[in-house]
Length: 315
Image (cartoon, rainbow, N blue to C red; front, side, top):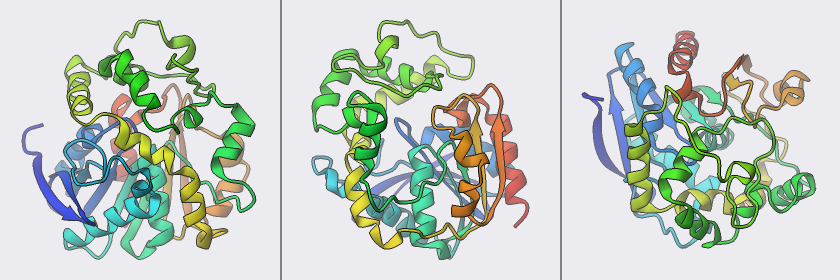
């Protein structure tokens, strides 16, 4: 981790913590939930060693980034967070950057490419595919109809409720449960029993996740709490309203998509059936990695590093 620089940058009304390393074309790395810039530690070092300037922020509400009104979920829409990315790109003195997103970071990256494609040279998105806006039904209505009220997105909605559950469960256990989750079935959080059937199952850390890694995440989330990250989910229907102007819009930048075959968000039918390519016309490559689950930047960093680098080398 030596050589990674940390700085604070004022963007879009907040103070954003950024980790960066290297010289050359900028690669903006956008993390997900419940993650931090730290989720890109392997990619930062690799990209810096291969001629790129890797830049990984803590998103608003996360880690050492401050200034976002945590108590107001409406300040965590995709417009806010994509706006943060635009302001960050501008602050770096770049007209365009490469973007790599994972989980919520992938969703934000898709929206950044919808709202401001002029800021993105090319995109590599991990785990979360692009989903077009359904003009007839709000997001949470869809989720409830498909999975019921115990689905994690529904259970995350009530301010304070899931925070209390996580607090009683313990921050470290929450982090361990999320990062080691490897189940293709829908993610359920029955009331007062996070992680459902896995609630009482002891966690054995895999080789790719050390106690030091868990301790870093735990320390940061104990400082900030989980509200900032949960606010992104609480904006789901507001995002749906605000994104109405982009109904039927296509992603108009070159894209590579990488997903683990065991990832619960891997939608084989949509990705292989032509729907994905229809909505992302410049989708150049889809990679499904056997035996890998959701947190692939950390689980299989060498493979992810190579996939990112190979795509960047085309431009």
